[in-house]
Length: 124
Image (tube, rainbow, N blue to C red; front, side, top):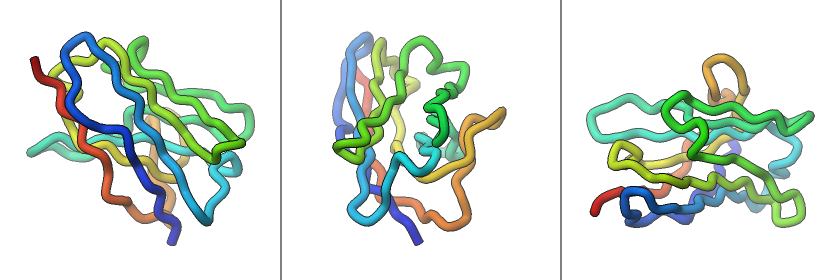
């Protein structure tokens, strides 16, 4: 199974920014749609953003639209999630995975497994 590696999380202040990175050593990210997901304590994991494989069309969950930006760098084989105007409710463990993008924002593909994620904590 394909497993991606997330990094870039940490402690952010409300109104601040963080940039998450998603990489892989044996998987070419620009040949797949990639989704970012998050899971807050006591809540189900949810898709927050997705970038399609063919035309890099982007998708955002309503609560992050206008604040988060997903992008890919094919040379670095990395997909980023730029998180601006952070809010305490963005606090969660963030994951990336090969996905199907669409109305559900992102749905992890069956051939992918979850990585360890990267923790984002937004607090004054």
